[in-house]
Image (cartoon, rainbow, N blue to C red; front, side, top):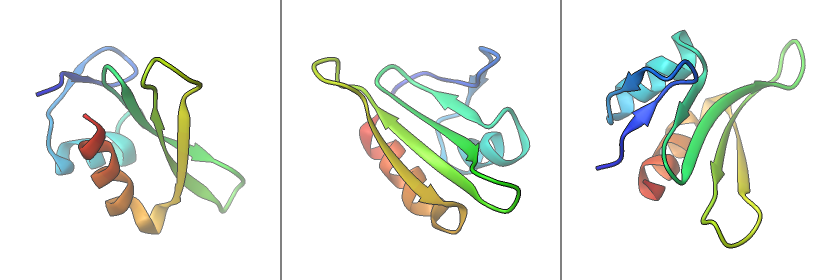
Length: 81
């Protein structure tokens, strides 16, 4: 099980509810060793969930999801842990 942190360095529990709460109501960032998930405001009305995956061999891969697809983004994040 991977240790998760928010952008302030405080631990985040490794479950979907805690990660979603940190993204929506917390700092907007959850970081692990090889993967991170964060929110990004594209404009006043557009907000995205970005999952960044870094395997250490190539450039990091970023996948962008609209907020309505947050469940898919969080499942990808959990899968890459």
